[in-house]
Length: 254
Image 1 (cartoon, rainbow, N blue to C red):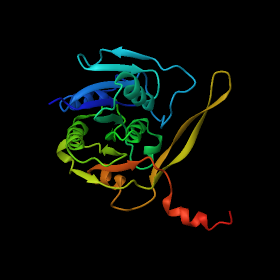
Image 2: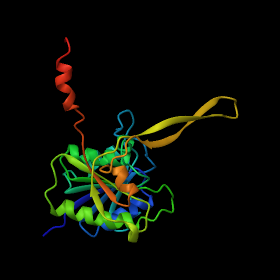
Image 3: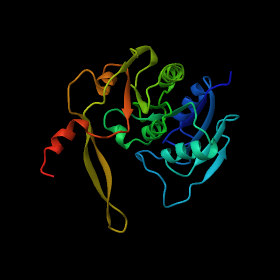
């Protein structure tokens, strides 16, 4: 029996330690092909490259595992992987392991999660993994452990059609993690601020800063799960229709 084909990507780039951790665990569960950005693409969301060529080069970063760098975005990596390099749909797409949480509304901005969403649009079981730790020296072993559990379940179980899973792991040792909670996306947002600076020519420029703030105190959200030491799993869909608002809009004088 042939091994399942797993496409692995990320938004932190081909040399990111989180990608290495994900490739290690995925390669134990299937035949892996890696297609990752040639440079960091964090915060790219669902961007695609339309005004520039996309360049693909083979990479030896992972030894005998087939790997490629892509000059485009994480979504470009998935598209090129499916329609050009593989010329078929893989059995599974996994993205990450991202440096930093993609819980709550971070899912909208995340290149990591947009790669997984792109997979779900093709009805391929897809998971995005993130670790709530921005340090380059982050310990990915706990996230790697739970990635293995969830990848195996995704391959062996009835995966829902046209959804992907947003998986976030707290910054805790493996021994302190309490398990997995399937939950909903929290209502949490960035309170945006801009740090105004001046270049040597006296021209102003800005760095986006701010604080991420939870707007609710519910115990069934991904933010609550992370706070309480659980790995959060949120099923995500690309259908952004506000179904509950259709009847209200139909009552307008249109």
